[in-house]
Image (cartoon, rainbow, N blue to C red; front, side, top):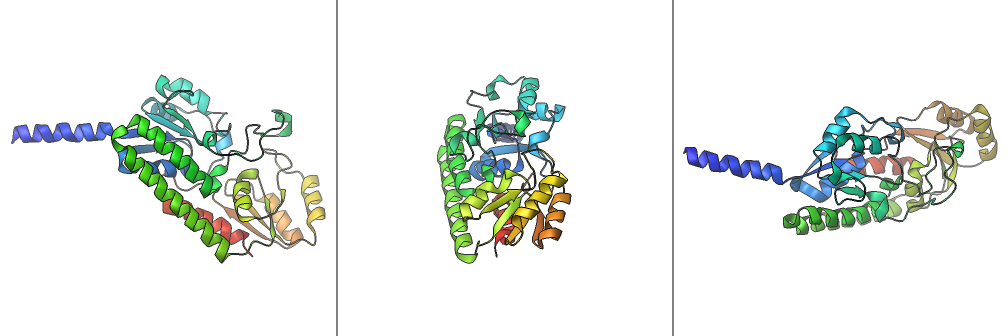
Length: 291
């Protein structure tokens, strides 16, 4: 009996150790890691869903998670540039540094929009590499899932086909969802966003972006900017959308002045959320955008 228990303990220990430990920077990327990895991965998410991932600080808890990681899954395109490099440096885990197999950026595997422009902080929170918020486009997320499956196959060849099959399942569901949105909804009116974080979704559905509450990315709106927006949009039909962590004052002002509906919505799922939560989040944005 003791021998049996010992063998069982060894097997359970090996099984636990065999999981690929993934640290995702934001919840939407954590969702993709769980979806592709299934029960062969253990996923930790660094950023809470109710915070702007541009402006976090490297914390000891992040460094502890990164120290144990086999794979870091970042959004990339400099979204996490203000805190992830410092957290990686403090983690002292060379296997997950940029350029190593244990470091993965989703943005490196999709075509980004809004690429180029000067890297000048006087112009706001700019991203010359491209808009990093591709996770609002499930088709691009499917491309990231495929690349992630191949990276996981490098780290864990025994489960390679499972990873690829899971990525293919996600791609199929993403295509079905997009086809449903396009057939079930009409998107004839335009939209004003706070930031450029829903631009991929607008492009996917053919929604015209009429303006931004921020005068420049990362710069709070001024009264002059909001007044100019109102003046340019009177007589148009549109909707105002912004994330839960973004201030509501500018959106409320535009809503009153223009008579448009205004919606404050999450742009990340819960830290432990799954694929159903991801598509439910996008459903909320799409229902708000639709006529």
